[in-house]
Length: 317
Image (tube, rainbow, N blue to C red; front, side, top):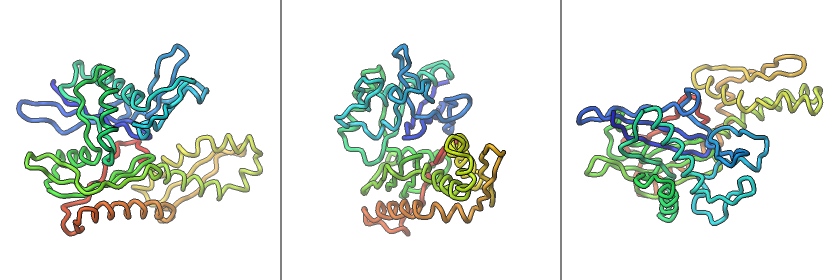
């Protein structure tokens, strides 16, 4: 069945969705399983011993052969070193996009009619141009680049949002952006005003806030285990905090569970405690969102909605 492929390469994870054509209409976008049934694939590239690029979690303990968060460096004249070899960030991004295209081609049994790749709303033309060139060099010559905030608005429209003016709040794993969008005469969305964003704020900060709380509560127990024991106990802490973060979106309490040499240890956390931990970070994003609104002399009362970026299950945002 003919389909359009949308790709979002974030600083932490990569996601893809397809909309299939049925007669004269299109179905609602559906997430594509990119990794073991998950809609998310870590935005990580690893240079294998045979010289090939592997997507996802590292296949080697050699950190010099693994790279991540290269998307935000697109257009930077300083290359990324991978296994000692210089690589342009846009080339690495194009390699990851090509992997997604091939993966979806295999799952769908045919090539996409069109491909859309999202990018930060604040990008200047130069960064889009160098990414287009890198994609073309890998055979992806007809990819449409759209601001991520526009793709979020279009996604909400496909699910029934009929507003003409809105502000998009997009919190990723390690980045945040907000921008005003408005419906054009053609029925699509465009950004206006001045997009706002930070590459240093994201869902990973929420995980770290929980992790710091757990380390503080268990400081005495961790010290008693010795350095190696503490390192072993804390190895899976960030993943555990990501789990607890998601549990607290539906439950009022949850436990951060760590395995110490003496056995499993639980650190209870309430939703109210968690909200207090992340309030400074959330407030910073709200301030940026309001700045985006004020940049176009629009008042909150003139908005038809605040559109949140939909995070697939398992997302770190």
